[in-house]
Length: 255
Length: 366
Image (cartoon, rainbow over all chains, first blue to last red; front, side, top):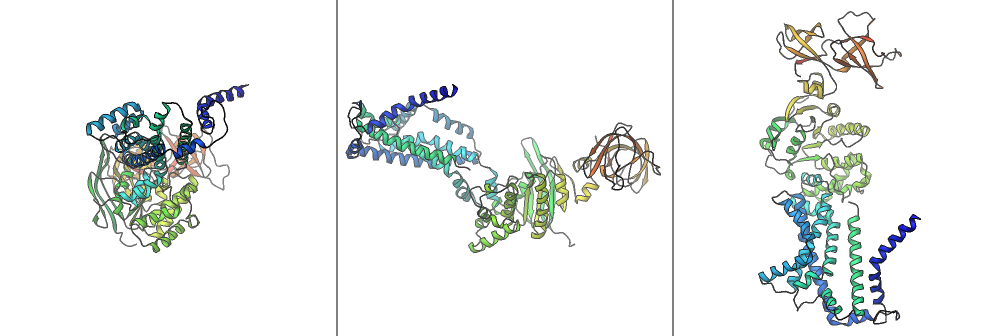
């Protein structure tokens, strides 16, 4: 008896979570435009997306922003994590708790505050403001990923390296970096995913001259969900899924 | 034996953490080529001394001289000193070879010189076939040996070992003790070993310093420290010891005293200067205590006690004997092969004595 309930309950939960996504994915291959009934298998929505210059530009913009933002956030975040782990300085405890606070800050709050800052500083809304905004919300995720890996290390290892004649920079390049690499890569992938599908912050801090995919999709669905949107969403889903799986595998690798 | 040459001088080292004085005006000279051990309970400052020598810890006051040169301001990475850490601290992402080669690469040793030197070091710790393994694929004892190879390959003037055997199980530890000692003789490098294990200290060292609360309690050869402890702390820390109360009755000159112990008067030798009426502790190692059947004829003076516990230890029979004063004495005796019935029963009255001169008489401490 019990197994039936157990599996039944799990099935119910999974169904509730995944049915909408499944419908979307199925419809992206549905020849029937309105997606209410199955009109046969097709790739034409993907083709339409590929041939739509406006959408493709937005997609390329999105990729550019995500790659730049994830990379910068990873560099800053890794250095911040190393500093938090290795050095004692004033305000260290405050800094590390602020990292968590910024992770939990509602996105809308972050979006508005970023907008205010950009306006106050006179930064034109567009690529630069978008990248800065994305770096801001990606940063804590990188810091947490790298920091928690560093914390798992035997600190004596760094002393051993010094004892064997390694300078500060050698310790960083030969010991810390190789050991933290899986976490750094995972932090980058996570940042990239977060950046790629961000809507709220992007909506506030980008200008009309620089369109990115999630916003473009958002404006398209306001006039009705077109099958093209299903195709784009499916691609985003697959990309995100692959990256998240890779990042999890990297973190799981033994130390 | 040549006159020993001072390799390392520690002068008036002090260190305070908050209100805790870990090291108090600490002086020490370590000779070239010796196996030296810092022995003491945890928190006695021995590891702090080691870390100061390595350069991993700053000194509040005092100076450190290596080969006559002050190295106090030389950073750890520039000191010709290497450390074997308690947790081994091997680099998990590198092979055994790369671990051992690390120090050579850091100091810019020529590439073609590195491989043979690493191979030689690994051979020395009998890990020649393990060069391409990762540390996680090795047993604790093997990791330990990699850590040693990684340090000695740099041919340091001084090798520091921080409780390096404590993570190993008993049997492996004993084996490594012998191996370390052998390695030290072969390399001729000065070893400074830190441990809280007195047995380890006694069996490996040329000289031992016993520390407590940041101060030197006694410095000497293992034998001096075991047989002539300078104070009660050293006596109790190094192995088991029986402590009897006594009082000086008369001074016979030349460090000979008449001492009243357990109601009887004994003629004892002491290194300290006492005067009549001084309270003393008379200390006896369990293996120096002689127990005899009370019915046997006794030409000498003896104490009478009652066996309250007997403990079969395999090699020895340890008996706990209560004296009339209530003090309990442990006697550790080897089995007599010719006397298979050798044993005592509980509550049996026995005679206790010791070889004159094997006792240690110290000023009375509580």
